[in-house]
Image (cartoon, rainbow, N blue to C red):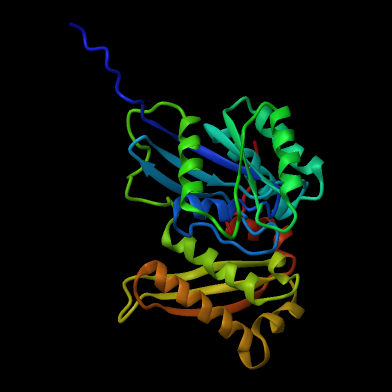
Length: 307
C-alpha cells in the first residue's frame, strides 16, 4: 500500500522589512531574532545600510533584511539610502510592511503598502508602537487600510514585546517564504554581519544616544584598525567623522567628557558582543560635507553603483 503521508514542507528565504524612517523596523528585527543586530534610537533614519538577522526553526529559516527607511533624494548619502531600500524590495522573496501607529500621515503608510503590493511578492503588515497612549482607534484604521490593499496585519508593542507575539509573527512569516530543501545559512548564526561592521554600528548608535544635536545625521563611523590578535585584548581604533569644524568640539566635549562617554558605552556593548575585554580608541575627524562627497561615501561603503 502506497504511503500517502506527506512530509511537512521546509521554507527558507529573504524577508525584507520595509517602512518609513523611525517606523520601528530595527526594534522589530532585534525582537524577532532575539539578538541585537540592528541599532535602535529614537531618531529617524538611523539605519543606513541593509542589516541581516537570521531566525532558524524546524519549519524553516528566515533571513531578515532591515532596509533603511524610505527617503527620496537625488544626491549624496540619501541617494544610497533610497537605493538600498528599493534593492531590498527587489532582492527579497517576501516582504513585511512595517507601519507605525504614530505616523501622522496616512499617505506615508499607504506609500509603503503600495510598494509591497506592486512588488507582486507575498507580504504581511506589522503594525508597531501599539503600546503608545490612545492608539486603539488608529490601529483599527490601519488594519482597515491593510485589508483594502489585500493584506493581513499583526499589531505589536515596541517596548513590551511578548514571546507569544514573537511566536505568532514568526510562524506567519515562515509561511510566506518559498519552499526550500535546506537552510540558506548555518542555523547557529543570528546574523551575517561581521564583528567589524557590528562594532561600527554600535559606536554610531552611542553617538546618537549621547549627542542631543543634529550632528548624528552628519556623522559617520569608520574602523581605522581592528586587531583581534592583539594582547592582552583586541584593539580597536575608530574615527568618528563629522562634516564641520564646529561639530568637532561638540563631539569631544569639555575635557573630552562627551567622547569618553561615547567610548565607555560603546566599549561595554562591544565587550558584551565579543565576550571579552577590548581596547577602544576613538578619534574625531572632520571631512567637510562628507555626505555629499563621492570619494568619502565610497570609502564608507555608501556606494550607489552606476547601472
